[in-house]
Image (cartoon, rainbow over all chains, first blue to last red; front, side):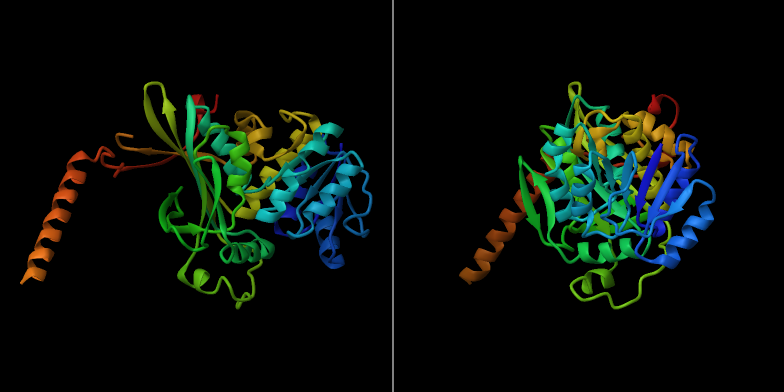
Length: 329
Length: 45
């Protein structure tokens, strides 16, 4: 199997390592606009990895192409690779970009290829956990996603942008826009992260979850933020981004009908976001290359993968899901 | 005087509404103890 990876940042480099350590991947071609970074990553990966200094959008011979680059170029790249009959895995978490990627569904279905959207930490692992939790219900009413932590600098910039843009929630069969930084909710993440205040922001999780759960009445997403994050969200970033963030976590709360009553299931995971995003991206890429996705087309992981084998594979790679067990719940 | 009377009536009504909501509330008490544990065994089958 030959895989192309566009972007060798904190997530892209780890994703490449996850892929190259998989027996089925014979060759990995990596592109990055920073030549020094590209050389550094490729030499650290050893045999099987090749640096490609071509433009990101240039034709690339690969069974699947993974887009782990900055947001803003994923749609054009996905359209180009899909036009060459290649499946694409995008790790974008930008609302506008995810919306545009979802519009590639008809073309991808027609071509019998897949565009896996939001194959990272959140969206990504959040979608898989939601699909897994949903299996416990006869009907899903509500899904609430919360995340904390950032991966590399690109992820930190996206977190900053998201807190300054309108949030998109699904409510009673329609999309509603909400002010960023509103809707404070104290969310308990898996240990050792614990409780953090989370707020609305421009997060694409709902866009990917709603099509996967027809009939769901509410889907929301929130992100943990400090007072300084919210205060400076509409300004340019005042502090330089860190090379990699600390521990992060994702939390999914699913509510619905279970037999005659109603119930709540809370699932989560704790890891460094770049590490977890890379593992999710790698497992999604392998599923796309093996033809193990549920269907062709452009969609999120909740629509495309079987959650149990996916979570098993993630656990094997060190990313473990957890369940919240409250007394009497 | 009438203003004080109105304020007292408003407070009384607010108290009554609060009491009704408190008595009729069916949400129950959220979990106060418990914690996270890894998904394993039958939960991943």
